[in-house]
Image (cartoon, rainbow, N blue to C red; front, side):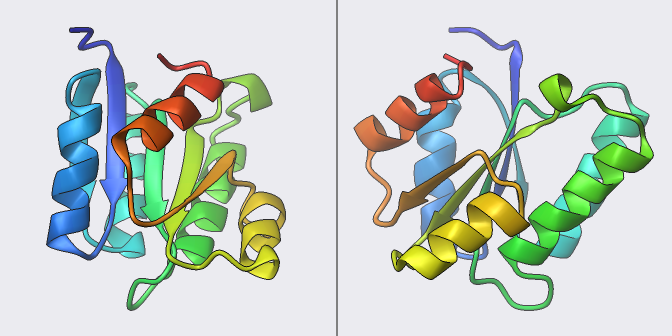
Length: 135
């Protein structure tokens, strides 16, 4: 098991968090945020500690700051900190929303790197993480 990878799972549903953590926990350290505001604060803290996340798995539909807003805020934080494009955290949106409009919004406006549809399946999640070059 490699513990070099640093994951942030942003999901307001306990069981969905448990599923993702169970899968990714075999490949690194997982931190949890239950909404977009917590995710942004966790990212800010990770940069302050010079240990940025390698991957953020972000639900879209959350109360308060949703996944689109959180991802866009994380990208702004990276720009403010001078993070070069090749060193940005990978953001994977995970949602039950499978219509093309939400997929395109996640990939373009929120600058997500990947998008998968719930229910979360082990093979599908690991395939996407592999496509991102992390495992």
